[in-house]
Length: 164
Image (cartoon, rainbow, N blue to C red):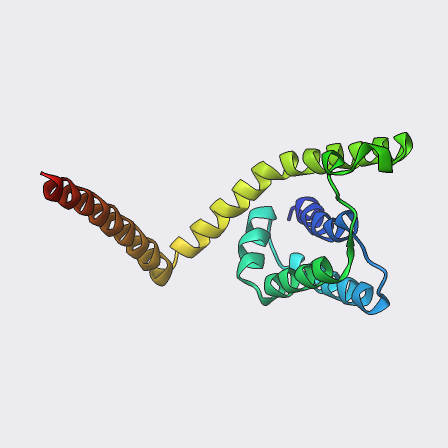
């Protein structure tokens, strides 16, 4: 079992709370700790990173994570004001350097997470498509996309015919 990748993914999710927001509410801090204790236990049941991401995406823990992140985003102060949004005359050079370093770190994390997000997406897609219902939903979605495209083409053709 490759718990290192799973633990890194879990730690990254938890760190995102504290990197992005100044959380002072003790109840919210306890909710975060409790949630991540349960996510860590959940992670121990997964065989590898892709398995974790696929199962976590379908898990009620993911919905709880999203809900808690939304709560924190609406009740806490953001730490991530981009440097370009901060008026130069209102912040010191030291604070500007700190914000630039934070921006650089945030961009580096986003860049590093990009392949992992793609792997997670592929794992979730594969897990969903491996079921009859999931495969049927993907096929239905493709048919809907085709129908929308045909409708658009026919509407365009009708518009051209009515102009003549």
